[in-house]
Amino acid sequence: MHRKLPYGFYKAFFSFLNMKKILCILLSISACFPAFSQGKYITLFEKSGGKETPEYGAVIDYFQLLARDFKAVKIVEKGMTDAGYPLHVVLFDQQGDFDPAKWHKDKRPVLFVNNGIHPGEPDGIDASMMWLRDILLGKIKVPTDLAIAIIPVYNIGGHLNRGSFSRVNQNGPEAYGFRANARNYDLNRDFIKADTRNAQSFQEIFAWLSPHIIVDTHVSNGADYQHVMTLISTQHNRLGGMPGKYLREELDPMLYEKMKSKGFPMIPYVNAYGSKPEDGWNQFKDSGRYSSGFAALFGTLSFMPETHMLKPYDQRVNSTYALLEVFLDVLARDGQRIADMVNADRKAKINQVNFGLNHTIDRSEYREFEFLGYRSGQKTSEVSGLPRLYYDREQAFTATIKFYDGYQETLTIQRPRAYLIPQGWFTVIENLKRNGVRLERLEKDTLLTVAAYHIADFQTAQRPFEGHYLHSQIKVTKSTRAITFRKGDYLIPMNQEANRYIIEVLEPEGEDSFFAWNFFDTILQQKEGYSAYVFEDLAASYLRENPSLQKELEAERANNPEFAKNASAQLRWVYERSPWKEKEHNLYPVFRLEY
Image (cartoon, rainbow, N blue to C red; front, side, top):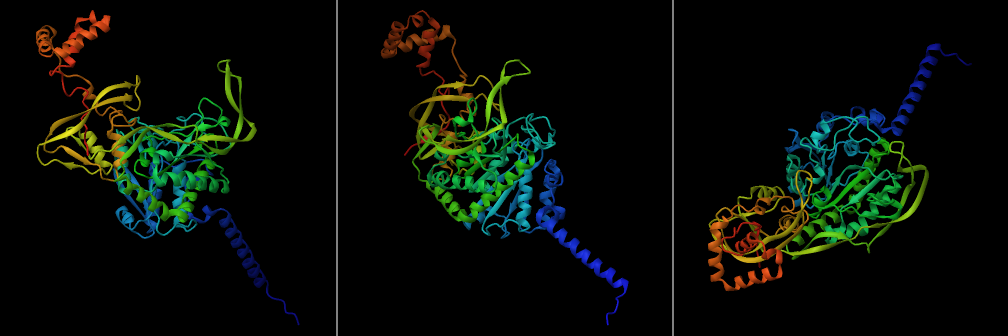
């Protein structure tokens, strides 16, 4: 006989079913929206629906929260910035070592991510916050031997200079920082010259980490197209060796293939200024002033992802996140191989004889890419009434483009046994030391026969660039002379892994050399001279004692009528060839001790 259960039983039973259903729904939501289950680790980017990026203090607080809650994370302060704040480096190591020296002793791969060099381009900041969190929560698998370092915000001063108008064309976020740093330097032009505290601290951090791969996150402008993500890989010819070959033939293709599979088909940085992208373009040349070009001088595989500023902010951040995931995929497959390859290349630099500088484009070498573009055209400007460029997003197209990524060296330098530099050039010496260059001090005054450069000719920019009037088209003459170096002067032996960097900055003809960046401009100004009416008699006596020089002067007068009519020019001609000519004038004060 059926017995009727009390009403309270049914109420409790259906309440249980409803709770179970609610729990299932919540679990489903959690699966679809992982941030829902992450509680206190949800970022401002996620809370705002992909529309906001946090202020500087909130960024550091977030990484400090991760460091407190997870043993695999440690934050260290390394050096000062122009804004008066220290740089933070976030270290991730599942083995808990947090010591780059031990990482390299154990031959482990090291990945370095630099964010916020241009704080108006904060995509990498938000992507790195979520990326590291998801690694720690187990959503992303990381090889156990991989060590990761992250600079959350490199340009702190620019990040504090917060607004929404500095990048007039950018599509979000709602507020962001400014491109220049606290002293109005563009930090992505400062890696060689290191005028800023930021760059000086970065050099020390980079030498400390000695990463095998560096990813420096950016946002691009320029032409309009369908791609969210573009990429600058360091120029493979300049990188050279096995890493350069691996980069072009294997790593780059792998990155593009994997990004396409993640729904973000990638294209090389669209360096098509002044022409249509569909006509193809040259690879961006990342010389040593840029992060990727600087890192390549030390054999590091270097990348600058550039999302497109016209794309919505959430798409840009998500594509950066996807690219960071892709690098982990690559390192899971090839991490040990990459570390071994880069380490071997660095060792090979110790014995390398010839080094190529001043690379120029070689348009006989190119790769083909599928470019997803928008048709461009001309229409009448409402501002000027004249024709203006525009892109029509209703006319999307796909085209195969040529990407010219080959460069040839135009200057070859044979390394000396050592360089010598007097101790008075302390700004150069400090720069070398920060970059891990080994220097030795002379223990006593020493007479040495060395090769010396004289600056024969150069061009100087008419307008300032990042605090300098850059020299270019530099020509030198070379002579051998005996020079007495003082106790405490520096000898730089050329048997070290930093050989490539040393040659790049100390050879004056290099396009990003310390000479090109005005470190030695005081030698270009003559400090002593002569009083013409006194030197006339001395010059005449010197010509009588040196009849061959008298004949050269007469020949110059015969061949140059203007010179023959200019008494002061002739007197200057004699002075320039006399023993009284100031020997320091145009004498480059870095000397080569040859083999």
